[in-house]
Image (cartoon, rainbow, N blue to C red; front, side, top):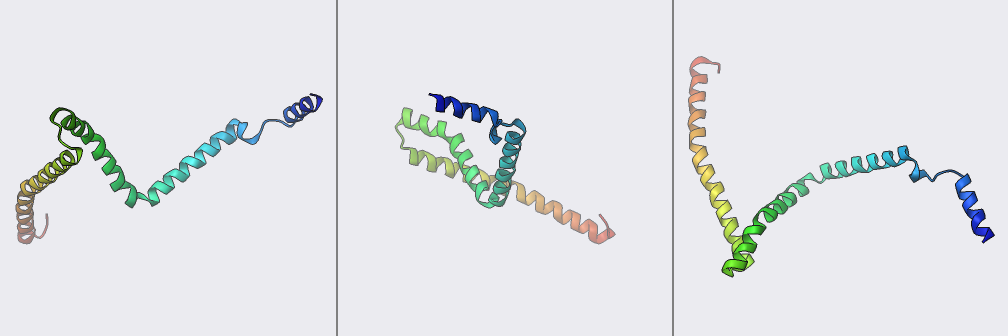
Length: 118
């Protein structure tokens, strides 16, 4: 018993441990956050597609689960259907937007050729 009380006295007399000091703890958190941000920046070419995939899975999960529960459609079929719809919408938007953009570019280019400035 006396050895244990001696150890407690030695620990308390030596002061707080390094990670118990508020300023040091805050500095360690700051360094950790900075390192995580640097890592995320360096891995952004990998993280962006992964995060987009997670977002797509998160948004489509209620539809997939509802189709499975109410209509007994397998999850894979519903997921493929949703991806096909998303790709079709993307293609439709591109087909809808590209011709007007090309026409505006032609008008702008002709105006530049005729006047020499925009």
